[in-house]
Image 1: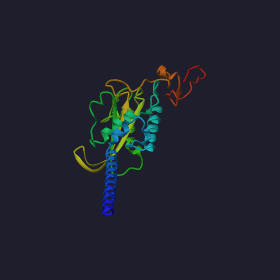
Image 2: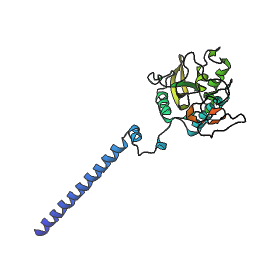
Image 3: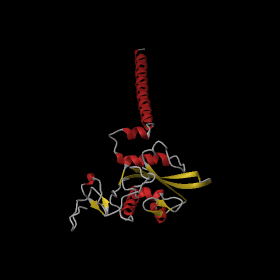
Length: 246
């Protein structure tokens, strides 16, 4: 009788331990599932998370290509610019471009952002060999632009935003869109490029830059620094034979 009781007690103890282990395992599984459901936005808002891990809408290669292309265009404007500022990449502008590109809408927006930033859009159907294929058309508008603010073509504002002297920050995003309405036609596959600029350019009646000797009218914040006809704080001030800093 005592042996039977001992066996029953052992079995009850073993069952209790198994139930406790199962409960702990289920609790751990529930916690893992909860963590996996945390939104990417919540992870990004954590200041300890490295920024480099944020999924971008544009590759580093395309970022560099767009930025270099803009600065090359800005350094070669004609007539020459006295106050053309070197352009740099801005992550906040890139994030705002990402938000709009994700909508897959062939239009400028959102309207509340456009009060403070400039924006260029480009779209292409099918494949492209280089990201520059999407921005070259902006530059080609120069053929219809006459300084200071005359346009003989249908539009010149993409080009003038590119070369607006005080627009020294840019951020872009690229997005593949399906079944997108473009000028009333439905494109099955489209690649949309959104570039946002700060400070906002294209003010009505104003010229995109001042003309004259390059870098002769740079803002004082650049300390007289000039590089390839652009006000550039990364370079050291230089003096030419006449004593001009630039």
